[in-house]
Image (cartoon, rainbow, N blue to C red; front, side, top):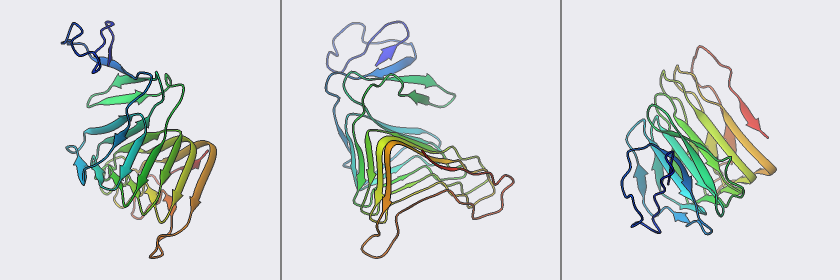
Length: 220
């Protein structure tokens, strides 16, 4: 972890002085072989409005629930010697991957469920090389009340959605929903159905009356 005063806290060298700083961290620095992250919990949830982040090497989510209702979820898979910049906000941090030269893969499978849905919908950012969802895995940032949703952004080289998996940023309340953006530099693949006939799809749809219906579903 990097700090603005030049201090570095390293889990590989925890005895390096100083061990304590009161400065706000400015970034996450990864070494030559960033460790992989695998979700092994059935439910990993933070308090409403907070941020849940899994940022490391390869990120694998084989089932289970990741929840941050009305909050923010960050999934990032970085390559060797990458630096993820942190910009503090009132409640959390905004992550900036501009200092990362190469990314690794992110996969959701076996009914994995990632959600920030709530009164305001929350926001989700996913950044990796190959990002894939299969086996009825879901990512939801739906606005169910009067709040304003932050939307979903997926950035990858290759993106695939299959086997009945879905990503939605819907509005079922009176609030302003967020946009859904998939930015894949090489390919976007949305195919197939689950064994029980559920279609794979991306959706940003309004199911209720709202003041501003200007929504965006962007594939780039």
